[in-house]
Image 1 (cartoon, rainbow, N blue to C red):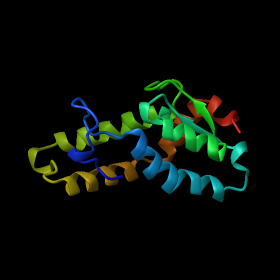
Image 2: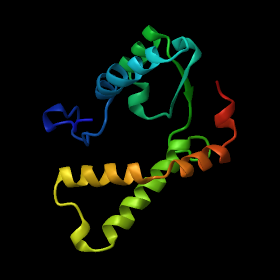
Image 3: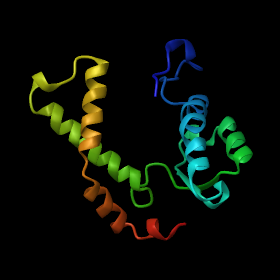
Amino acid sequence: MRKRQPSERKTKRDRLGLDGTQYANEIYDEYLIPLLFSLDKPINQVRVVEDNAPYHKSGLNKTLTSAYRVRKLQFPANSPDLNLIENVWHIFKQRLRNRFSENEQTRPRTENELSDAMREEWDAIPQSTIDRLVDWMPHCRVIS
């Protein structure tokens, strides 16, 4: 996902993080909707999990969700007891902290080095770790 540019700032307080328009264009249009159409089930039989992040609730995303009849399973933002990805984010961030605190020389110097390090650490999270998290959250398996 691309980083928003200062020219895209909407308010003085905008920190140029992900916004509703970028989420709709770069996640929904490019990945989510094509993925849903590629599944063996009709879209209205699949639930998409989202927390209450502002970009999930933007007008454009509501329009896309309605147009494609995407069903959402809402979770509170940053709720590790209900949202599996919060636990995975914690593991990912801890791996990055460990990697970069070992010594000053291992810290990335450029955005590309940081991106590469993040990709390596994400890929290094064992699938068995994620499977254990899913098993720890039995309600994740009963939703069809």
